[in-house]
Amino acid sequence: MNKPQTTRQTDKLLGMHRRITRRDFVQGAALIAGATLHPNALSDPRISGNAWAPDVNNRSDYPPAKTGMRGSHPGAYEVAHALGRDGAKFPQPTIMAEQYDLVVVGAGISGLAAAYFYRQKLGPAARILLLENHDDFGGHAKRNEFHQSGKMVLSLGGTHNLEWWNFSDTVNTLMDELGVNPHAMRKKMTFEYGRDAPNSPAMWFDQETYGVNRLLTNFSLRSRLTVEQINGIPISEAGRASLVAFYTAGAIHRSDSEEELAQLLGEINYPDFLRLYGGLTDDAIQLFDKDQHGSWGLEMRALSAAEALEEGYPGVHLFGHDWEEEDFEYPVAMWPDGNASLARLLVAKLIPEVANGVSADNVATAHFDYAALDQSGANIRLRLNATVVAAEHNDSGVSVTYVAGGDVQQVAAKHVVLACYHSIIPYLCPSMPDTQKEALKYQVKMPLVLTNVLIRNRHALDKLGVDAISCPGRLHARLFLFQGIPTGGYDGSEDSSDAVSLVFWGSISPPADAMDIRCQLRESRRKLLDLSLEDFEREVRTVLDGLLGPEGFDVSEDVLAITVNRWPHGYAYEYMQLWDPQWEPGQAPHEIARKPFGAITIANADAGASAYTHVAIDQAQRAVDELPEAS
Image (cartoon, rainbow, N blue to C red; front, side, top):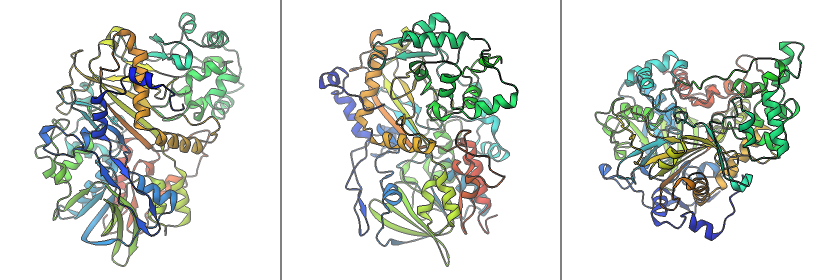
């Protein structure tokens, strides 16, 4: 979707002029001035803006409470882009008088877990430094706090599920040591991705795209749509007729064998399958295009028909197979701030001074003192706003160079774990073997966006009887109500009059001419980074005005704050039928990419080619085990 075109009058009606909202944005925006890098000079990326924090923290810089542009926020990525995109050269670093047993590049869950496992192996005397380019730890496990309503409201800023049924022994042991009981957490789950309200799920058609604002309730493309439901879809008459024929069809195609059918479905993308075998028109197919933006982070045209059918989309009935609707069942455990609470537990274990007395029972509400993260003389230090630009072997170990506050600095380490995304590593370690560098560049992360909007109350949603809505014509493919989960000591309000978060979830559609998967992902990333905070604000206000305005929602008064969690490098790349061959064991790109490189090893979910928290933890354990003299 292109940037929305609107008039000044429309902006005024949408409340774009409201001072309270603009103030919230200034609180959260780290505005970068003069961040250009060139071969002979490094300009100072000064941060402007005053980040508001709740009084309990007694600090002027408390990252979880920042609103505005978060996720990969301004200041977090410019240095890395200069290195990887522009081939920037950096001034000679200041050699710091700091010697470490381990330097971890990246303080996401994999990096934090690597530090934890390393200390287990070497003991409490191990000296460890974690370097993180963002202004908060946790990586994609981003904590979002709102305080604009008189009480703290937590919401989801990134990765947020515990798929406990897939946990390895390593992950189960770590959870036990952190006091985390996913089964007990699951019993407290009050959130099912917006399928609790009587009229959910629903799909909203906006006037700009479809010519009318229309909400269809109890409506899902993965359900057996009735003729009556289909006739309510505001597309062409031919498009509706094609949907009726598709959803009500019997077996109209034959396949000679299951093997032939599997081959057919694995070699065609789902939209083409709908067109060629389902007989759908282009405007009917468009309804499906963004339906996996949140879960997969991809356009549906990136999925094979087989992958889409495995997700429950219709089509197997055309070949005489049973297509049975299944009740939604994804029995994850979750904290009210997503896996940010897991990151907080790891930090508290590594640096107890940051959060004395924190446990799995109170982690969601515990106070964290960010001033204690990087204390001189401490055995474990976590340094924020520090972008690593080189990790090079020398006679005594590894020298790690990073940029912080415009200064180029270097520390020495015996070991290094690179818990950052794969595609930046060839630039950090240019002396790596070419085959390994090529493998590291193979995986292109999938962009992701979670935009949290704090609204005054949920009255309008209650009138509609919905808590999850798909929006096929809009920037965000889906939004859902997030009332909070009573885990980690948090008590989310069930009062319909209290402020609540709406989560707008999805990715960014690439241009139609972006054909192969990597081109699609890179173009999505480019479009995401081109969108301004004002673009996101205008978009969510436009959606809320059209969707909830008829039920009394005043978009100029009832939007209290907006936090945009943009992740240009979001989900780890997972191999897909249409784009990736079947490799021999040990020869897949991620397996070649993660090989040890002297005293440097590689963690993160990329190294497991799977975008899950438990995979990131498993890869951290492997990376530590592979360090020389650390096993």
